[in-house]
Length: 111
Length: 114
Image (cartoon, rainbow over all chains, first blue to last red; front, side, top):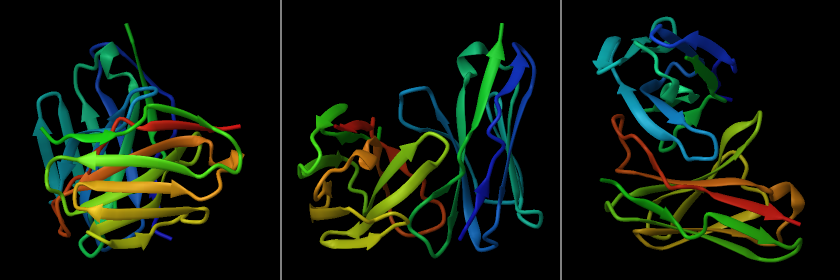
């Protein structure tokens, strides 16, 4: 069974702080890594993808990947109350079609 | 923009009914997927399709079937709905087999079986 693990939270951070979300995965053949944001009652929305070791930045979001440690993270700088949502980590192997999802981390940004 | 559209936002069906959930994508994607999402269990893959008329079982296919007669349309069928199939159903699509292909989701169908 290919596992994708996330701390369920809730992770609570004050407005303006950095939120750090973490994800580990068990399949060493994983090659593609994604972060989705899901607001309550809505469908997941892709916010970041990362395929190589290191950091990838997009606006206030930074994804970090360490394949040796089988670890991927998402940093949200200058967190806003509108960032309050569940963040889903998703992983895909080169040979696979479907994404394998973690159960998500609930983030609460307090004003 | 990629658009994945699910036919219904909310559905209420009776136990034993045959239920059809429809999904259409407009980006000529090869792959289409059906997930269900339940509190505490996350997203679980039911079935996927990588081409017209091709389908593969996911992690929880029991009680479901699928149909893909056209590239843009992927249907999920509950043969005989049961209360344990009450859930949020999410359709997704992606471009083709390969590393750098993210999946895009429809708006979801919240199905209640009574």
